[in-house]
Length: 197
Image 1 (cartoon, rainbow, N blue to C red):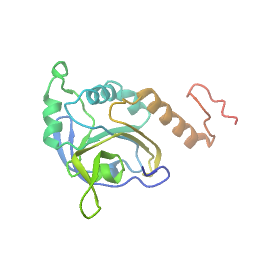
Image 2 (image 1 turned 180 degrees about the vertical axis):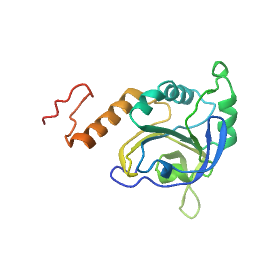
Image 3 (image 1 turned 135 degrees about the vertical axis):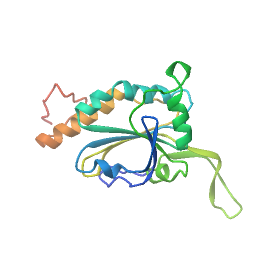
């Protein structure tokens, strides 16, 4: 896996579904100089663990907005799949009410550029590595600063859901560092400003 921390986040333009509406040519560049971005990947629409994360981000979206952070999700599904899922009620395994962008990466280019594309590999007669079946994204999470630089990344295997509390803690730590220039030690919390190492 590539380490993107300290590097410019890979740019892209793709269709996103925002509040059940298609937006062509969506790009994270819209947030440059304005907001931090929490860009996360999930394996698939209409799956078991993914809606728990997507809905949890929506249910806690105000906590991210108060911190000036845009939340953006992405999977290798099409925009049509994203829309169908957003139109399905929560009590019927849908994600109705999700307002933040869900990027469609049907070409798998974005997932590959963030190095979260995974699947089963084999080798063809020429010795080239090829996917067996359809590759999907791992549960990647990237905290991107206002300058478009990746400051934190975390990648989980597909069956392992991520922690929103830890995502918020990392945002708080980054913003504390940006404001005060002080490092944040192990288990640092925003209400504890003892940063002496």
